[in-house]
Image (tube, rainbow, N blue to C red; front, side):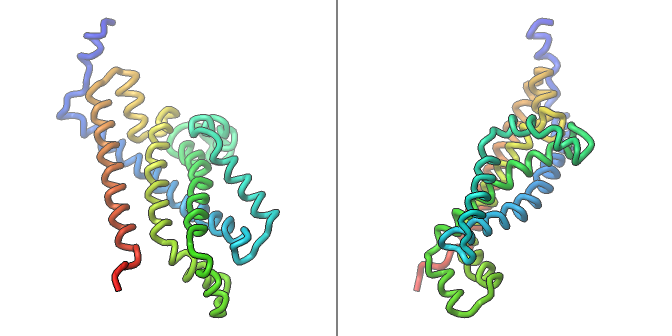
Length: 231
């Protein structure tokens, strides 16, 4: 088939939405499920990482080093390599290696250590007296973590959530290579394999617009959470 003949199969612009809207919904379904687990488990892991360090509420060198090693290992592999490496584990959990369930597992595995490190960093950047004041006031461990550490680091944690959300959208596009659905699958199957330029252009524009909107909204939210500098 000649290249010109291939190009003639571009999806008409008026029909793009019939493919784009379902794919866009699948992307957000994947990302929504993943972020629920990533923020929960990654947030808890980040809090434990910080509080088992020397500046934490319950310092424990061995535990901190072990958790740090696990987090670093989880962040070491590119997502595509990780996705392929844990296929047996994914199949054991979901019973399949294709579709949204098969994509969600590696996305959670990749996103959790990344978010945990961001949360740990956010807590580490707090002044040392934040935890000290909580201890002096007689607060319990949970009260200090919730009302002092997390509360003070909330703007940075929200910024970390925004960064992680954008990363998960990027990962969902990569997951399209295993038939996970979503924007990535649409771009690979229609845009790349079928040489459909209209689909490829549309997916690129939608992804750019989505990321820009998320970042803009996140920046506004972080600014709103920042303590006022005025007297």
